Length: 234
Ligand code: DC
Image 1 (cartoon, rainbow, N blue to C red):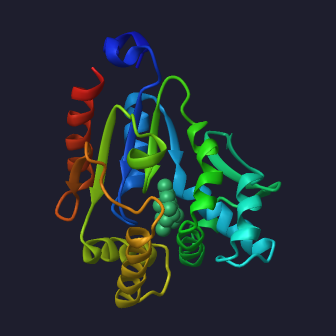
Image 2 (cartoon, protein in one colour; image 1 turned 60 degrees about the vertical axis):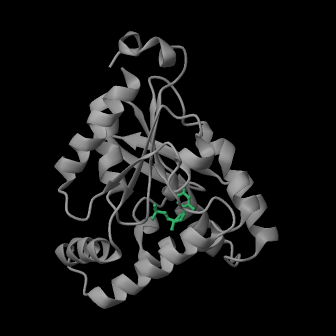
Image 3 (tube, rainbow, N blue to C red; image 1 turned 30 degrees about the horizontal axis):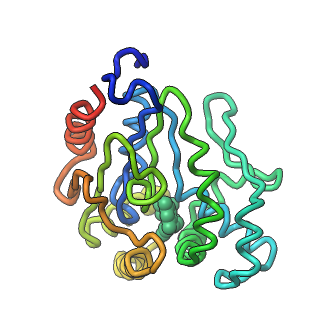
């Protein structure tokens, strides 16, 4: 997509699309599809919180130790690199791309993310992803805090049961022995923490399009999102 194809309202600056919502709603898949469709950069902000969770464990800093976590977040030595078209996440020289995807790291990320000064320390790093030709930003507070003046905002949600079921199938496909009831409890605990924290709680931006994916395929979600974004960008 060329810059010149954008409307005058947005052509003078970098177009930004935000995708927020609870864990397991399909934000990552949708964001990757949109970044590909619009040929834009992609920010997986959850990955940054996950990397911080791993770094805290490496440095033996507890998930509620604000004085330890804030400097760790400000100076987080992380880079996002592409090797042979594969994107890799490097923390302090070590490839942590796969390590950050466990349930434990996700729970740790959700715990460190409740601390306002930790969130503040990660703001500039996230905003740095807004580069030409544009950005699709995936997270919890992309449209409400980090990119408040984004061109198109989507809040993608789904029932906790539908999200637990999807996660269950993904993990089973990978050969993991998991219990659906356990996954549902984990998702509910994470929702509770993400929605009820005082700093940047998970909620839709006032100007977001809300899509409930409980009964939709990813292709249907993508089509709805694209139709809406096209009206905002062009
Ligand atoms: O999207 P995810 O599951 O990878 O995110 C992991 C945790 O990080 C999530 O439970 C809460 C936190 N997070 C956040 O507070 N703000 C964001 N923009 C992204 C993630």
